[in-house]
View 1 (cartoon, rainbow, N blue to C red):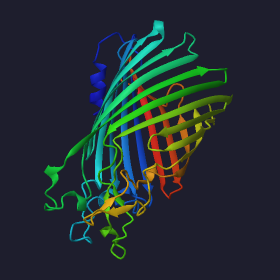
View 2: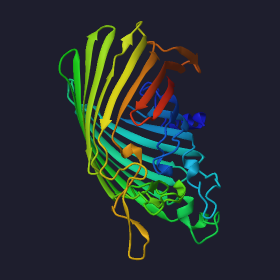
View 3: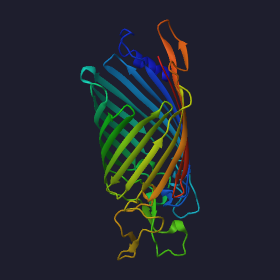
View 4: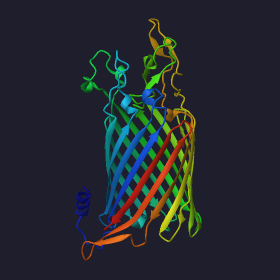
Length: 417
């Protein structure tokens, strides 16, 4: 597959090799694992165990000094015990457990981008189109970014926008899906819903001194459409079902508003301490109309062990308030209507702990080896060679105050030709 991608981009335009810049290919691999006891699929109780393997390839091919094309292609292989409980209940046989189609799934995604640069005006523009698909969501995206640098390259301003259009298959929990139809024959009856997400981003970077560089960034994100997850259950404070089994208590699927506005604002500062140590500091404030406010503080300290070998410790602190729509398992209130049928008192409700109040600590270590002339070279002709540029390895651990634990291992390498 890689060979095909390289051939396609290499033959976009035949020009003198002296005019072309280096073509670059990067391979990234990431493994992620988590576990916890607050799965929203089972109403805020139950396993959150999940594993994900995500290889990724990026290709960047300059056509000439003004134009370049790029492509990103990735596949996520993931398994989730909590998603396997989408169909955990069967009407009339609550002790029976069925595997759902989402126990092990694959998400494929990719994007292409084109960049046009005008060196005389220090301006560039990048257009991007993307696509992704998994078992219940198909997503299309497009965007544009405009960037301008000062003549001395000490200042950089960028503005851009993206739009994402997602089509969701409405997969409800098994016992709430088709009460009057035979279980297992509903595949052709799934409804769909859509979500549109628009983002507007702006950033400004400046070199203040020989040692200090800062960057300010802000986004406005507006979403419209399906913002709940159809197979997330919410169990209510069911006073009519005191002694019955938990799965028999009154419950519905999660319900959230169909619009959401998010506004994050961040500042990044890189400070050169000496020849072997740099500090990278970052702070972000976030607010949305779901009632969540959060603060993020992170620090990386790249330490040069040798001229080309760098070790960088990582730490990030994150805290957020709870959404006004969140309550834990069994704490959302219900009532009986005039026909003694239970119903929710609140219009919106969720037991997804991603929308709860929590504190998260992220800490890890990265290793990077990047010699000036590459790690190794392979001659493919008299005038062309493949140069392997770097190897980078990173491992990170997450600890969340609600009990969620996770870690990730990532590997990055690449070559130019």
